[in-house]
Image 1 (cartoon, rainbow, N blue to C red):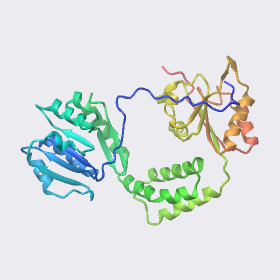
Image 2: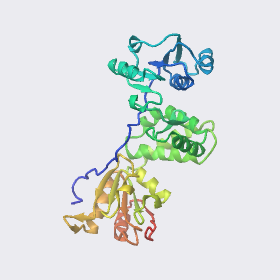
Image 3: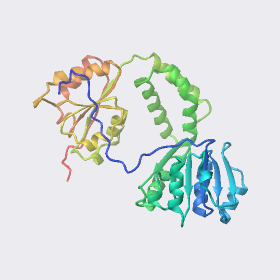
Image 4: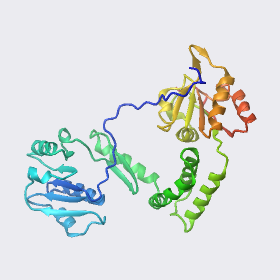
Length: 352
């Protein structure tokens, strides 16, 4: 590959069992058919999202009756009790349909599809167009875990582990981010300046277990002002991919990959390592050019070009970037242009 040419995006996504989608339901009508505890859990979840939930059943569980008796916490939500079986006409105008149907699962599924309403029949995977995952709720931060119905208990175990990693204060920090986003966008151009700001914001979030202190919003906006006035020069990080096992990458290496705009990688770097990078990052193979190795100066000039344009560049090599990546010349070339350089060593012993 001629590195003087515009980069090609080599990103790939391995097959997904389902598309993870976060659906806005505030003020929307949703139909729930069934009065069981399982249906109640779904109705409560939908109401927590601000949906107007119409529930149809001849009888309701005690827990369901208790849910109807208390007002929803979400100001836009509603729970309406219909003490009768559902009919196909009830599905008109709904955006989702959820049923706990033991005997008429296929009938409910077909009626919802005929009405153009996405449908989920609880515990009937053959009659589900979408699924509910286990969630970690730090709204507006929401983490959802799915095993495609294969192992719900495994999903719950994963959820418990994530719960221990995310502080409760994350909710307040995310709300602060929401309130600052418009002001930050006015001060900082899209791309590297904004990403640097939000990386610093994220570092602050996880450096403390406390909720945001009073006045921190003003401090953060002052930081955005300083970033806006700073020269638009990028940075370069030389990252060692180690022996090729993605699980052996250091945390610092993973953070660099997830912050990169451009990744220049040797052809010996496996796809599993590249999968850890930010999806939007452009991947550029640079080590082979029609079967011949690219000159180090040509690679260095390419890195300088991207960095001078304000891009965050990662030079990804197998093993350790200095020991095996012949990075000394590239680093010296960057320093002659006063471009900030960081080196993240990789594990040099082979994986066993």
